[in-house]
Image 1 (tube, rainbow, N blue to C red):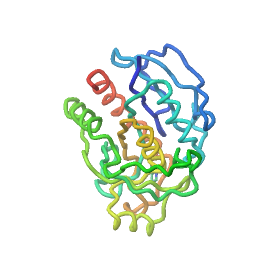
Image 2 (spheres, protein in one colour):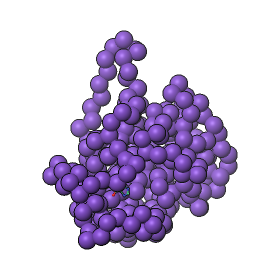
Image 3 (cartoon, rainbow, N blue to C red):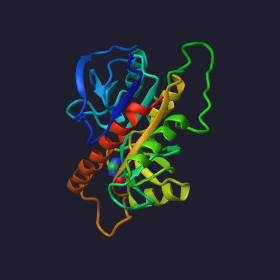
Length: 246
Ligand code: HPA
């Protein structure tokens, strides 16, 4: 059974080298996920793929049904989730840089962010000291090293609400808080994966210097172009990593 799920973000609505075997609409107690789950083979191994923003990239970050997405992956048998995410760089400003974060700060609001909504009578808490699964992080890091791809292997992801980009003052605040990268989808996704006991790690691709980190304002067309190139590296990492993941 396929036990690895990949959640594709902006710039990665499909995996070119995925030999698709079938698509399945999975219903959950929380509604429908962003898209039918794609079942296929990558690097000779069965995996599941889910485009976070929908097949045509139509669902904005604050309207993604994160609970349905994570639930559906678990329901389909997934144990490890590789989340791909486009981010802005606050530190390490080189474009197209891959970063495997090890910490996260949640600045989002108004999103359905937990499965423990008080309807099971008992209040439930989960440990989130290390929000990403260390085993999967290590597996990704060793694949990146063997593929000789330029990357940073730790850093803090600041999750903002979007869909607009941030102001310079907001980015300065995130930097003061210790954030290295900024994106709009890292939470509640990581927290929900932890609540369901899934091993979850993120491959972040820097698409632009965050607001105020370059002389120019953010050029959205350029962001899309940079992302396209960055996602080529992500595809390479996935092809290296998938066969060797435990
Ligand atoms: N901010 C938030 N999310 C992003 C950015 C950014 O600068 N770039 C890509 N996703």
